[in-house]
Length: 410
Image (cartoon, rainbow, N blue to C red):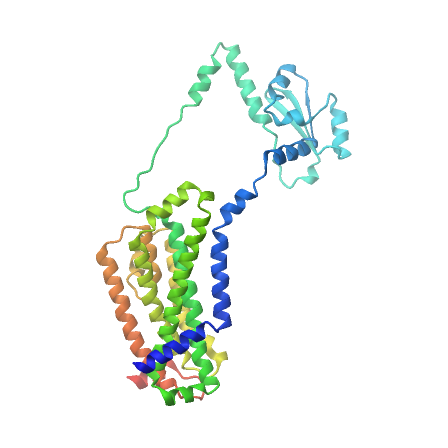
């Protein structure tokens, strides 16, 4: 036990010296912190009213129009209309000539209340539709009002009838999968990042120790069990610390930019990030990392060269990435049988149960059963990994076969 603690403390301190891990961790924490400032950045970049008016004037200098009907002109050209800033033409040939000479970019010829023409330099437009500055909508209103008057229909009554709206509200009984999608997505990505980063780190560290013969010195001073357990626990505690740091950075960032966030978004966070959700997240992250780290450590011990690590951990990488994909895909259907079954399988439950618990109502007994299965599997794989590590520790030949080592253990 004393040797395990010594190995743990030594490895834990070394984690702060590993450039790859520290740089990756710092970058992720910075990205999370910066991401929380996005609403504030967007608000600060909003244009002032003066800037908007200036841009509008510059844009309308490139627009021309012809309206021969005075009634239509008085209706379309008013203080609220963008066209009041455009150039007025009385002759269509002059308008076309200015477009061809690029004095203006586009022109509108209002023929009557139900028909107008757009004149443009077609080759400069990638799509057939162009912005008409509200001409179609305003002509529609004008034509309707004219029709109402001709048939003695009160336009105000029609207008009031068109304003009638049917409202509805949504009352969620239990958890809202829609509201919790963002929470499930971020939590799943954090677990994925932590296990991939630190799992590979454990395998690489062990392979490097065998490659430079450091393992021979270590194994003479302590047991193989103390070595693997100390290394895994150091990675586990460091990774859980990373998870907590990510959550705190995100919380601080949101707190600093609280005023810039939409009220609905903050309400969703307050209502759905409960203490029980955080506990479930941390528990499944803890035992999920423990299980995977032991597997990564045992597979890393099978090789004698760092270059062979990727091949050795390939199977567990495939299983873990498949688990991640199942959780991500199932977010669209959180009540699916796939996610339910995956939440009980130890290799997929660390992410699947969090997604299921955050987006749907999950019976407490399901959570307990899933957690117990994960803990039992973690213990069994830890025991098996220690056996594999013990056999592979002093092997400096070719890469050991996992199947052969398992047969020897049996």
